[in-house]
Image (cartoon, rainbow, N blue to C red):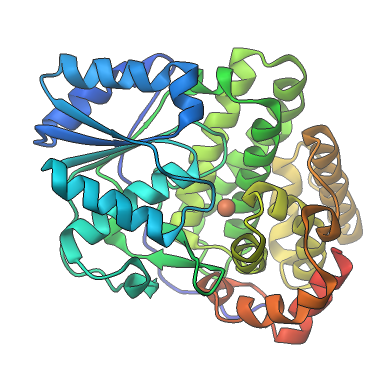
Length: 386
Ligand SMILES: [Fe+2]
């Protein structure tokens, strides 16, 4: 079995990155130097209750800006929520957007930015490179350990008419500044630490196996895997600040990897599942990851040794050993994360599996899968993950 042919050239693009504990208080100076006067702050009620929204608003006001706060966003951000956000953005006369939160808040901030500059409906921008006018200044501050949206050229939005998530891919939507304050993980509930770190793990694995991977993306994917392997279990068991910071850093590295190498079968399947059942994205990835790995193994043999090394094992020429250790490590992390196992346990109905496989065939993430894939392959992965 052969891997799909590799690209001979590579690109690597990331926003300005600011990373460090206590640095959320710099969000005001970040937004101001981008030229904003009236900030549209997209966040959620959990972060408001934890005090992070207040901290961000104070920083923005101290920098001399007015702030409009918008929190009408749910998980798997919906098309109508983006359109409501746009109406508020326009009505308030805002001129810079700050997203503070997990992937939902950050993707919603991107969606509002896209519509404010380009008009139309958010589904008009589904797919690759449909955005032609530059976005307003955008600062994204991730507060989970999984999204990667703060450095990526992707946004994933739920088309509520079709009940299917779609991906918008464009260089235009990478923000101007990615600002990560790992202290925000201190108030993230345990279940979200687990599920978002598994999302980062899936990003790293899929980007590393991607046919668009390069030495520039591999170094980031492997660094993410090393940090996750070292710090995930102590982070969820003891919540020590150093381990939580490692998870934040892993998410950042995985985000830089997948923004440039793109993803694979796991995310191609996760998007229709998330859209149809409004399921937690990290939980869906957790359920799929072991079977996605096993499906990809036969075509990524030249890379698997590097991966096992990053997971903390000595380099071995024995392919069987490398595959077994990879699965064993992933299973240990999944067990510690406390995430659901089996598609049936996240609400997926058996009679929907064929529809989900067919929808995944249209997802852009499938383009960079290392293994040629047809709808029967995808259905097989879903059945084995059920
Ligand atoms: Fe993801």
